[in-house]
Image (cartoon, rainbow, N blue to C red; front, side, top):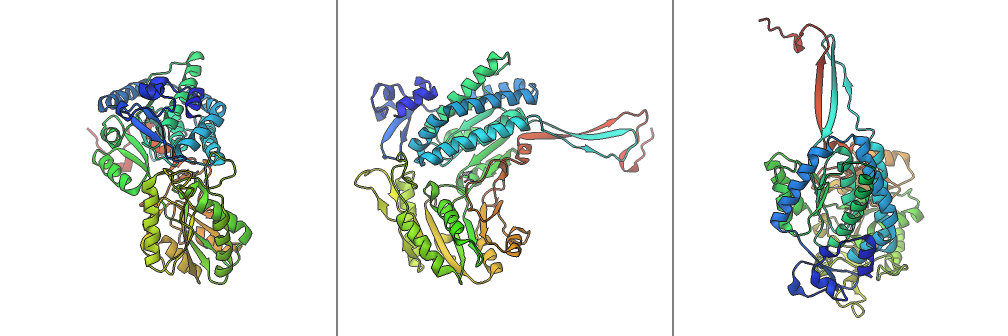
Length: 516
Ligand code: UN1
């Protein structure tokens, strides 16, 4: 199936190692080299992808830099037309690409399709934005002067993405970067190179259609560099890459952020989350149960927005946790290629091992664990399906303070809302947060400056599943970057302040005189 999806999506055969094409399984012979692609659905290798050499990476960046010189001259609404065509091509490819996402990273069919929908949405957003890259006109203190801001293209935008949203996060960055006048060099996750190649092919079709309309489309507008850390480092250190947007672990972001800072380049960092929700006595518990279930168990707990900590008011704690436990016991876990399953596999064995370590650490601190065990090992000995884990913790300590990228929800009791908000904020990460309440005062308190310290704060919905129209990102160890909607585009452009004197005299600002 992978082979026919890749063909349908138009992935060029030479992107896969020749050996992998010769073999029926696409898996090829390990001696053929390249990056093996393992599907978490079965744990089997399904393809081998050609990787970029360091020289190819430098050449790719040079091509993108050359493209920048031409692309920045194209009027922004025309650049938007390319992104409009990208959105059309994504619509046409939605089914196949969503399915490939399910195969490559193990998302349920609905979530695989949803990821492509998120790409289409950001394209639509960016098309509108291409006519709205507004600057201000600012009052000046000098007579016969005018002051304004202009937003200019910044340059090559590097994108480093993670396996869990292998294509949507690329599209958030690419759609904005392209309308802002920036070519994109993309280093996808080593665990998701196939979907990146598919995006490259979809983009190539949009670019070809754009060229048919008479537009000049420079080569190097999108460069995809599959490979490991050394390729990412070339991108991060390259003087012709003024901005890198990186999604992944806090450890990765700390390394990337410091290297970018050393050369005064810009960073958009979207790192770990350790997201919490507070369930208050007035909450609509039916809605809360559904919101918590999706946020904590959806995508097998592998979203940076996944709900990982739950603070439940002691007056409703026991009854609510009993319902939650039942949901954890009954949720369908299994192959994400079957429509009925809500929870697919973990990405790999290392992820499973980290989950078990966290559960052991929680037990050692008095945590009571429901679920968490491996499933379907007989059917898929090399794949890692787990029953999501609900852990009732006596206190917020140990593994609760860390992000374990797996479906573990730590539940704790609280008695006073301010205490719950303080506990929610008392972790190093600051991505997403929620309160479930029908009490206006409690909701507003949570959203206020003295409330949640996260980049995303929600009322009566879970922590995950943000729409593209808002700015996406978080504070503290989450990295501080914002992507996607609102005015996140400003990070992809450089701002010039322009002061124009249309008079015949030269008054100086601040009343300074300098008469020669
Ligand atoms: C991520 O996990 O890196 O808000 C991104 C969400 C999705 C994006 C998640 N729209 O859960």
